[in-house]
Length: 145
Length: 385
Image (cartoon, rainbow over the protein chains, first blue to last red):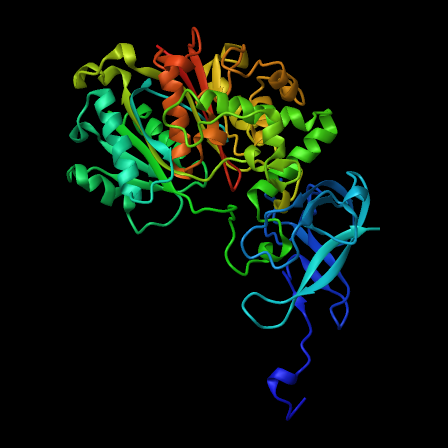
């Protein structure tokens, strides 16, 4: 928008990590987890890869991993790590994707008593202010599905 | 890939330890040098007899800190190598010292480590890294995920996890070097501040400061340096591994509970010993759940059953397989660079029969296992000669 100062320009959140999260809408409200599948041994990894972690082949293809998973384990974190920008306590979920990889992220929109290993969850996005300024980060989270 | 060809027999001939705790008036070199001097004195050798030195540490304290520290003992011109391998930095230094001697390159080596770990939860990624926003860069949260899953799969009650910590403090109460020497009950462990469910504060190791050192020498060279063979302890296996793909993606590998197993199997093969030969063991108990899963990965208990063995007292000093006899990380505390060599110190002390009130009867074979971020694992097997 010509003539508008930078500070007034609408800023759309950017992916927290474009090698793990691809945004699929112009307003950064939806996205998909991404990774690579090995065409030689069929192992899938979450995030970036050049060589297969399992068989070391370079015959990889980029794949979308979707938004669905199953809660493998969880914990309620009451003493957060340095730099954690969210609420405390928060729920950290270890989620297994149908393709095999596991993805750690905060679990939101769930009462503690309703958390259960094996429950179905889906990915959702939240905008979080960036620690060092600049546009907000679109951060992937889990919630019950 | 697994082409291990040991050569000459290598012995631990001296060990030293700076107490673990908080020492605001001492710098890293002060902590290290006290342990080194003790180890040299224990071996009854001189610094100028040492042919190579390896220094394990993690937090940056200036370049070439190993050289700067040892320069206080005299500039002998020997190679000095600084080693960073996360929580296994010290045990990696020890592993390198072993291989330098067994291959015939050196007669005698020094492995030492020291650390001044900052207070607060330990993180491994840099500022503004994606992990900071995702909330997963939290060592104890990682252990908590393992603990929650373990309890679900095995039926272990949280009181079994707490028992690991109670036992650690009981052992440390008899150890003047420990960071935490006061004992507590299962109830007190469970009522301490919650860090990450199910892990309370007393189920997590303190971050600490301290130093540890070991002097190693080829068996055939002991007489040359006038070393007392009766107090020397043989190294039967020295194994270091990195991540072994286990069917999970990279985001999960840091929390893979049984990554010690491949290193343990290599160590048993190298030594010709098996789990049934082990009399005592020191493992990486950064959190209570860590100890349970490590002793399973070492095949000392069937998978999923270490919690029962712990409840039955089998891992106590009076049990059939005593674990973390000096108090472990949970009570000794955890200065990263020193911890792996601290485990060697305790194992050697036990095998010499010099552990005083903590002495395990008839101890002949001891295992020291150390883990680190980045899927680092070391397993060392020591044997009374």
